[in-house]
Amino acid sequence: MPAHPTARIHPQAKVHPSADIGARTVVEADVEIQQDARIREDTIVRSGSCLRQGARVGAGCDIAAFYVGRDATLGDGVRLAAGSSIGDNATLDDAVHLERKASVGRNATVRERTTLGPRTWVHAAATVGGSVTTGTDVRIAESVRVGDGTSFADEARVAPNALVGERTSVGRKVQIGMDAGVGIIPAATVGNDCTLGDGAYISGSADMKDGCTLEAGAHLEHGVVMAPGSTVCAGSRVRQDGVVPEGETIPPSTLVRTDGTQVPRYTDIDDYDFRDEDEHEILVQPDDEAYTQPDNPPRGPTPAAGAAKRAEALDRAGPAR
Image 1 (tube, helix red, strand yellow):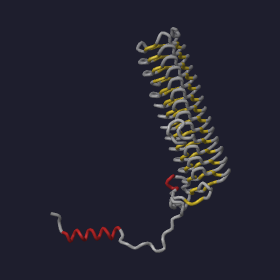
Image 2 (cartoon, one colour):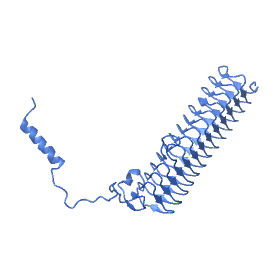
Image 3 (tube, one colour):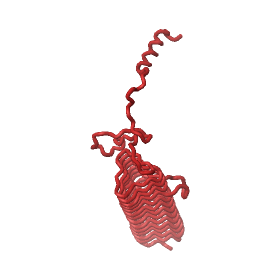
Image 4 (spheres, helix red, strand yellow):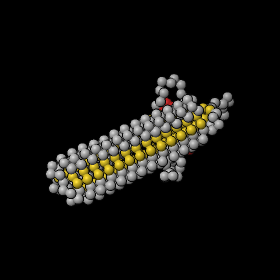
């Protein structure tokens, strides 16, 4: 099908005769558009882009991606920055934006008005809801499901098959689930309206129900369940298969055993830059028991005393020959 008469195609662009180029669309130099691709009106395809066979691009798009895969579908108003890529059979709904070097894998779906930050990767068969935002270097693995309105800060990681609900806030360097390949480790689940602080960690098969908060550096081990509205404060850890009751708050730097008992945990919560207004640090041992200074500490040479004795011995020995 010939290009629309109002389309402008650079003579150095490579456009297959079967491609459908819409009205007022601009195709710059060094572009490749393969057979049966279709580009609607008022779109610009920038230098260095490649649209593979059967790709569909909506109206009013700005395409600078180096690769748009076979039979991929892009809605109206999609923007793809330089270095971004779209896999085969992937779908991007209206007004999706990919920033530099962001990538969407084959058979993945990204819903309307979502913005993927620089170097964000959405892997194969994942579904990302509408109005989602990500920071830099976010990884959303295979077959993950992300609800509408959720946000991910820089370097967040979501392992295969995980479910992250709507309107959830995921902090920097958070890990959701364990990545050992699709189907190898049970998926983690995060409900709607949850908050995960920087550096929080959710192991495989752990389940955060709606309205839960996992503060900075907190950790849910395998199979833990946080009931609706519960909170695990900064630096705390819930042991395997433990349960945090509905509406309960686990204090900072606390270890929750599987039977529900709570003991202090060795963590300096100031390290997480969280609750900086606290006057006292919580600093205890990691072996379930609080550390106490012994009444009669063992006597022996101090490091300084040992260094002095070594220096004295060297003086007596004289210069090395």
